[in-house]
Image 1 (cartoon, each protein chain N blue to C red):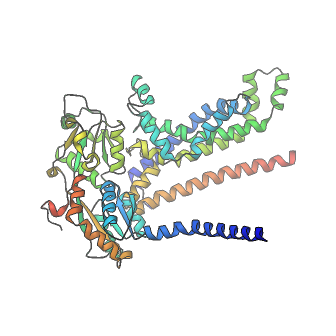
Image 2 (image 1 turned 90 degrees about the vertical axis):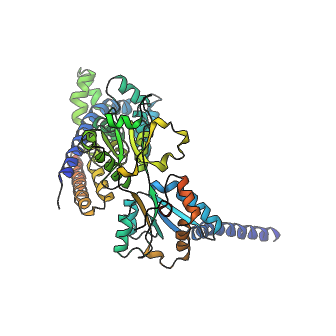
Image 3 (image 1 turned 180 degrees about the vertical axis):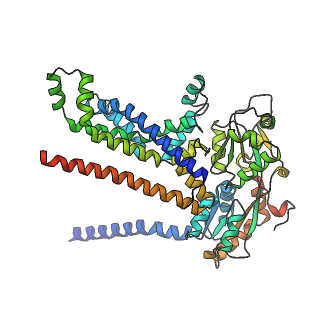
Length: 269
Length: 230
C-alpha cells in the first residue's frame, strides 16, 4: 500500500518534471521574442552590444537574426515575423515601405559605414595603397557590387582611381562583406575592400597593411533601419529604435567603426 | 523567360565543370570502388567512412577547410605554389578539385554496389579460361557493371551541377571561371532580380528532373528485363 502510493507520487513527480521540460522552452521562446530584429551581417558586432545594453536597461529582450540584406529582405517579403529591419543599404527599407510591409515614417539612417583596403600578406616596405595603384597583386577581393553596398562603394573607389579596367581580371567577389573579409583573412586574396568595422579596433593591425579609404572616393554607405508593419503597435520595438538613436548607442557604434549620422554632421534625408 | 549572356555563360560553365568532374571521377573511382568491394583489409571501414563524409558534412565545412587548405598558408596551397600553379581558390581547377571530393560518394557507391553484386563466380569462370586479372576486369567486370557505371555517371554529373555551398565559399563569383548556375541564381536573388532567378531556377528544376527520370526509367527497364531470364 505504502509502496504503491510512493510509486504513484514518483510517477506524478516524473510527469511534472516532463511537463516542465516540455513547457520551459516555449515560455523561454515567448520571452525571447519581445523584439525580433533582422540585421545585415556587417552590423553584427555593434548590434550584439546594443542588444545587451538595451536588455539590461529595459524589460524587453531582443532576438537577432543575421544575414545579407537581400536575403533578409526576401524573407520579410515572404512573411518572416521580424519586428525591425536593419539593412546595409537604403533601397531595401524603402522598397519594403513602398510595398506596405514597413511602417511609413519610421525609416532612418542608423549608421554610416566606412571602407578599408586591407592586406593580410603585404610585403614589407610598401603600403597597401601603393600596391593597389601599381597593380602589384594577384587578387583583389570586394563584395559583389551588384547587391552589396560595401561592394558598390569599392567599385566607386576603383572607378575614381581609374583602376576599374586594369583590376577587372584580378577581382574576386564575396557574396557579402563577411565573405570578402574571409577571402583576405585566409590569404587567398592579397588585397581586399572590407568594412572598417570588421577590423576595429585598428591598434592591433599594422599601419602599412591598411588604407582608410577617404569617404570622398565613394558614395556614402548609409545603412537604414525601419519598423516593419507586422510590429506597428509594438512599444518594445519603438523603444529599441529610440535607443538606437541615443547618444549612448552612437558611442557604441563609433567604437565599432561606424559613424552615427546625427554626430557626423551629415543631414538625414 | 529571358536568359542574359552571363546566365548562358554560367550554364556552359556548370556543364563543363560537371563533365570534367564526372570523367575524372569515373577513372579515379573504378580502382577505389573495386578495392572497397573486394578487400579484406581492416582499413576498408575507414576508407568507406572518409569517402562517404561529403554526404553528411555541410558544404560549409568542406568549403571552409578547402579555402584554408588551398590558401597560401595551407598545405595544398604550399604544394601548388611550389609547383608554380599559384593558389587554387577562385580558379576553375580549384572548383574541379573541390567537386571531386564533394561528388565522390555519388560515384564510388554505385560502382562498389555493382562490383559487389557481380560476385566471385564470373571472375572464377574467366580465370579457368586463362584470362589474366586485367583481361578479366575489362572483358568481364566492366560490361557486367554497365548499369552501375550509368548510375555513377548520372549521379556524379547531376550532383556536381547542383553543387552550391562549396563553390560559393571558394569560387569568388568570377564570370566564366567560377560563377556556375547555382551561384548565378543566388546572385540574382541577392540583387532582388527574382524574374531572372526564376528563369534559371526553372531550367535547373526541369533539367534535374529529366536526368533522374532518364536514369530511373533506364534502371527499371534493365531490372524488368532481368526477371524473365532468372
